[in-house]
Structures are given as structure tokens and as C-alpha cells.
Image (cartoon, rainbow over all chains, first blue to last red; front, side):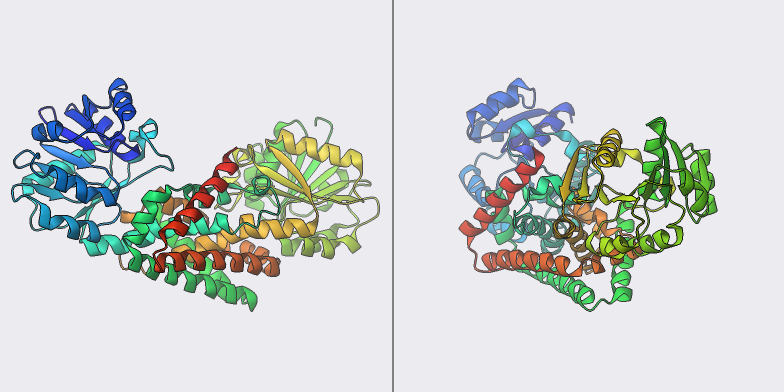
Length: 281
Length: 281
């Protein structure tokens, strides 16, 4: 990666980790962020080579641009900077939703630019570059979006970069498949964690009566409200489908409990155990 | 603990950890289990001093008896062994439900015996002594059941033992309070994990598209079907109440999504974040 120049736009938890990791791989890394303190911190901690409050200067030199902004800001960044991207630059993003993003952006791109849409399945219940941590990438899953338009050599380069950052699996999905699957594996889990902790009647000091299970199930109820509202609303139909599937399962279990149907209850638990064991392989 | 003789009945994940921990504290530890291989393993691994297939011989000598059996087996063990407990012995249990257990047992006890009902809030998604692990007790919560009958000096001894095994907080609750609280903090979480993983439509290989959040929320869907069916059915009313509270919260979130009420959604996320942050303190 030594001869590459890479710009990371948005130095939060994820953008910061990308910048740090790519710099460690030997590339020149520019950071773009609207927060001067973030840029100063990133430079001091050797996460970036140089920081910029606006895109122009960094983009003009960059072979790869990683945009790590909230979905609602992505389109505007592209519009505002469309003339500054280097000829034949590769652009990628890290957004947790894809169909709406891609439909907003596709018409805006210059023909020479190659946007490879991506989703690193890694994160943290924290905000800001101070919490950026390469370790969250270790062995994590990465989804890239299938497209006829992407150039083979660019895909190979991006895949190489992803692997070198520590990710384990890269899978290609269509935007539609991505949004459906993510509604289940990532968005539904966040909704459940929020509903669980918000359903506490708080009659008691819950913290005194919990085990690891409650801690694990509510960890992600510490949630970036602005970001996740965007992600949920941007994938509303899929997410509601998954919520309804879940509601059906939960109602089924409640009925089995209520009717004291021990045999069928156990069958559900044996099923869940087998399914979970598969995830450990 | 050097002069104490302690019997642990049921050398599973929890009983095994109690035996190992108490032996390390210097007491003499007898293990009672119906499985000969378990007793052999426990003795070889220095988890117990001596193993027995039936209670009599161990109980006759023991100052403390820790019964770590499924709730459905607890009463029978007491009935079968009521004449063998040492005079003035302390008995304790580890059951995850309390009202039904206590009502079954209270009439059966000899007057000299002091049963201090307890619930260590620690566990593992595994079964059998090979998985017994003292580490699960480290900094965990412990609930003891309030009773006028327990002797002060016995409570002091049991509290000391619990602390020396690594537990952090000991809280006293009535059996009724215990079952209500546990329905929320422990039983509901297991039901949700099962419903989540069982609601997977399995169109895709889910394992390729998950992050830590899905792993965390489904960890406890690997569940001992026999044990947890007993615990759920033995606390049915409370658990159904908690499931319904949860269902209400989830429906509320679904409606906010469906109506695209971004402001109220964010308010729910800010609430969940604040509540979860409190648990970290």
C-alpha cells in the first residue's frame, strides 16, 4: 500500500480506525473532518498524515476515498466535491444501509470514478475518534455490493485493503439483499436491546440483579440516536418485516408458556441451541 | 473455612464451581452426584475430596450443604435425605426461581436445619462439570432470600463464603421480589434470545453477515432446554408479565418507525442509552 494516497472523510470511530489501519499499512492518509480538534488529535496520534476541514486539497491527490459519514451527509459530500476527485479514483463508503444511498448517488458520479459500496460489520457503542480502535475490525465480516460497473482491478485492491485491515470474510450482496439481511442481523438486534432496557419498570435497582445475559443483551442499547434513526428509517420496510417475524416468534413462546406446553417449549430451545452452535463454527 | 465440611449436591457447571472454590478455601468438600464419571472427574481434578452416589454418608458429616439440582429434583432430595442432615446444618440452594421452591420445601424441614435460599447470578451456556469454572463467580451478583427463620450467625457465614468465592454484591429480597425481578433480568433475556435466533428465515448463511451485536444477543439462545423450561414454567405469571411489557415497548418502536417519527424514536434511544450507562457504574 506504500504508494497509495488515501483520504478518509469523517474521522469517527469507524473512519478513525480506517485511517489508522491504512496508515500503518504504509499509505499516505489524509483526513477530512469538520471538527478541528478531531483533526488535531488524529495528527498527533499518528492516525493521519494531514488533516483538512474541507475535501478539495486531499481529494485531488487521493487514489482511494473512504467516506465514513452519516448516510444523510453522503450525498451532499459527493455533490459538493464531485469536481475534486482525482481521475479514476476509487470511492467507498461504510454505510449500514445501501439501497437508498446508492439510488441517491448513482446519478451524480463522474464516469471515471469507481464507487465500490461497502459495509464493515464492526462498531462500538461510542462516538468520536478517541474511541477509534483497529481491534474492532479483527475477524469481522465485510459486505461489498455487487455491481457490473466496478473495475476488477479496483475490487481486488479494495478486497486486499479490507483483508489487511483484519477483516475475515468479504461477501458480495446486491443492495437489496444487503438491506434485508442487515435489517435482521444488525438493526433488529439494536431495536430489541432498546425495547428491553426501556421495558424495565425501574421499581428496583436493576444493576444489582443482573448477570452477563442482561449486560450482553443491552450493550447495544447505548446507541447513537442520530445515526441509528437514519439507518432504521432508511430501511424501514425491511426492518418492520423483521420486527414482525420476531414478534410472531415471541408470541409463540408466550403461548407455549401460557398453556404450559413443556414439550414444544423444549423443542424451541433445542432449535435455538442448534442454530446458535452453528454460528460458533 | 478450614474446619468446615461442605457437601455439594449436583456437580454441574454451578455445583462444580462451588465445590472447587470452597475446596480452594480450605474446607473439606464432598460431592454428591448420580453420575459416577462426574464424581471420578471431580476427584481427579481436585474439585472434591470425596464423591458419593447418594447423600447419606456425606450429609451426616456436613456443616453446610449446597444443593445445585434442577428445581424439580430439589424437593425429592430433601424428602429422601431429611434424616441424614447433620444437626444444625445449614442448607442452601442455587435455584433460579424461589416462591414455588420454598413453598414446596418449607413444611418438610426439620426444626434444627437452617435453609438459606440463594441464587448466584452466574452461569454458562454449557452443561457438565468439565465446564465448571470459578471465574463466572468473579464480581457477579448474588441474591439471598429474606427470612425471619435464618440464624444470624449462619447468614454471616454464608455471606462470607459467597464473598470469598468472588461474588461482588449480595442483596436480600423476598421470594416474591426475587421471582419478579429475575423474570425481567434473566428469564426475559433468554426468551428474547431464543425468539431472535428462531425468527431467522435462514434464506442466507447468517454467520457471514453478523457483527458482535448479533453474537451477543443470541449467546444465551444456547440453552439447557430441560432446566430453563422448568424455570420459566415455575415463574410463568411473572415472565408473561415481563414479556408483555417488552411487547408493548417493541410495538411502540415499530409504530414510531412506521410513522417515521424520528424525534420520538431518538428520544427512546437517548433513554435507552442513559439507562444502559447506569449499569456500567
